[in-house]
Picture 1: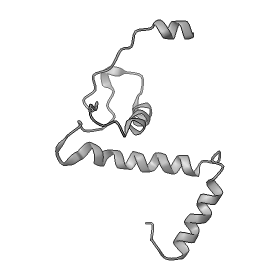
Picture 2: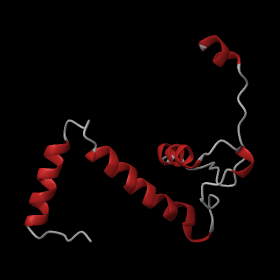
Picture 3: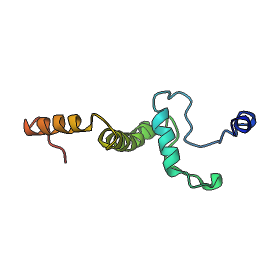
Length: 101
C-alpha cells in the first residue's frame, strides 16, 4: 500500500473556505473537514466562510469547533492528566473565580 500511496497523484480540492495565510488553524480545519466529509466531493460543504470574509467570520466560526475538540481531547479517558485537570477545574470553580454556563 505504501508504494501505491507514494505514486498516487494528489488531487487538491478547490474549496471556498480554503486558506492561504492561516497557518495556525490547520489542525482545526483538518478535523472539521474530516467531521463534515460524507464521501461526495461534489456536495461537500463544511459550513465555513471564505478566508478574509467580512468581520473575520471564518475565525469566529472556528471558535466553536476549537473549543469542542480541545474539551474532547483534554477530557478523554485516555488522557493521563484528565483527573488532574478535572481536579484543578473543580478547585477553580469552588473559588468562585468563574462561572461556566
